[in-house]
Amino acid sequence: MLALVTTAQLIGVIAGVLTAHLIWNNPPPCPEEFMKLEKREMVKLCEYKHMPYGRIVWVLKKTQET
Image (cartoon, rainbow, N blue to C red; front, side, top):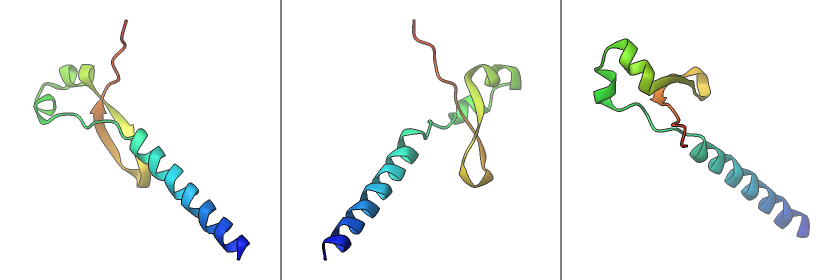
């Protein structure tokens, strides 16, 4: 009985860590008004990001705070 509870808790922890990883590493998508800009202007604000299952999406670039 103790082994079953421990295994269930371990599975719960693994599921929680994977969910937190997916939420934390999910950048905001590039807004529609940026997608309407010229390609050169859009590349200054957005970048390609490889997502799971072979998806590639436009996301906002991370800003460098000084």
